Length: 469
Image (tube, rainbow, N blue to C red; front, side):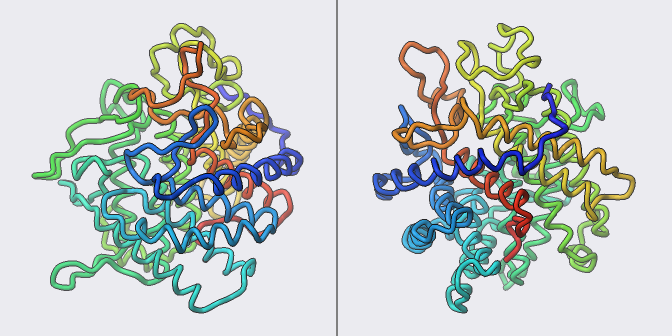
């Protein structure tokens, strides 16, 4: 169980953040100089050097988003130019990519962050540059929304790259691109000029994900533990009927792959913040019976975020760094593993620091939401404080060894992440039995985003959201 530090503050972490940005500068530059885009997208490190993995193109935006965030944090214009030029030269194919569910990862991290910086006055206002970024987001949101599988209950979901039958938990955080597309007044155009509002698909996907990928302790099946998350749900595409839980990267459909949970926690917390900018009229116009008004949406998002937040606290070691799956079979050989800090060098199961980095931001956003004006009726500031302090506790672990990577020859920022344990893709050092010591692009990016978020909190700067555009 996470040992929540109730006295930690964002300001306490400022020295660690300064060190992180100093280390990150060299790593971003080194990878940029070495990497040839023709080799594909950098995904994870092998012996400290980034390598590609031809499964799906979902991490390119994180590479360039890191450079943009480095400028955001330090004001070093060389990183702005690096990120801006790479966005123009490399990212167009990701805007129109019809084979992935990852548009919110790739394109909000690049086009979206640049648009936000212009809105904040951090880069010069330029009407045509602004419209270029907006157009990319509009198209990306529509392409994402077009990956649609209707379900028998009248809802539907953005299906994963596995096919029309597959609902991934990951996609909830990629909904941010539909949110921005909606905010820019865009719609998905279909046959006979049918117009599909992006907000409608955004809300339908969010409800379908909560309904089938998250458990609430209501006796749905024999493994219905509140807050447990399944990586994937399978549907019959002929009639839209739900069939069973599944997983691609977790240990089993009846345990929780911790990075899958992290996408749910962070995604719903972030979308709760976005929801504060949406009107009741916008919600009513979608015509979704489950969400007659904004209050119903907020209640559902909050229920989902809090369930996963509570589960993660109870099923994670004291320092806030999880093992890759709560049901990983080697954990039984590590008695008391929840009562001490995680051990990335153990000989039984890998930890996944990338899941911690994603969760930390989710806790901070959820906590701030509950402590602020966005809290649903009956919620207390105490609950928000607990979640917020959990986020700070996790962050303190991440921005220190053994998770922060101080070695200038190692291209990663965040050590001890895991990509695909069942497939055995992750690098196992010579003499070891468990993968450790490596980084991944989404782990580095979410650590960077967490650092910028905390830096702004510590300095009382503008609050960081994807929708401040």
